[in-house]
Image (cartoon, rainbow, N blue to C red; front, side):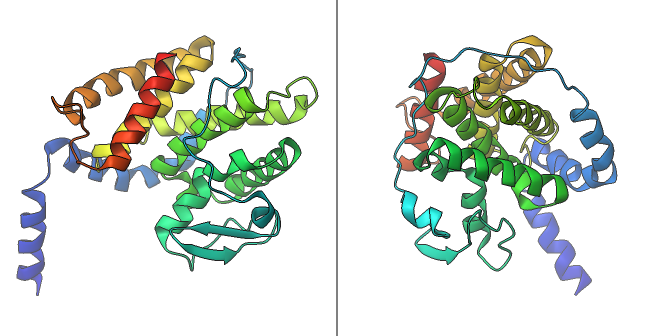
Length: 257
């Protein structure tokens, strides 16, 4: 049994790049000092404002029904679950991809400002209590950060009337972005690592100061490298997925504005 398992491990490792092996070790070791990292990344309290033109950021396609979400129903990957309102964020009985979709916040675009604020504050309170939840995985964190910036800085920029919420939002964005810098998905690479790079580059483009500069430096360095590898000479994404290709084009155009 042990011999078969060892053989399986060796066969799997033979197909991984050195960076992926190192990334796997890092992702498993991070739990040893995770509380310390959380304390460090949440220590900065000052806001670094930015100006965003209304309508600059828009979703690819909003297919989520506002009324169903408000009545406590969410549908992802063709599966509908009753999650209440505000949503119960712990959906451990759902497939992981369904849970990921809930924490992407793609559906936030369909809500009115006061509802978007309520549900985002509720998520932030949940995330503080659940630091090990998959909501903190780098991939959903990347998408969530971009969606939050799009909704609250571009579509609904209500900073003048919701100052307390925006202060809380800035702190959460800082914490999540700093956390993402320590947890780039080198162990998976591909579109996961590309989303990490896009998210940090976007955040670095939006926020001034040392935090924004650091996010941009890390994100843009990674983005240039990954685009040169993941985009083929014919312009397609190397995984040959129309969905991934559309996503890369969309985010590239967004950053180019």
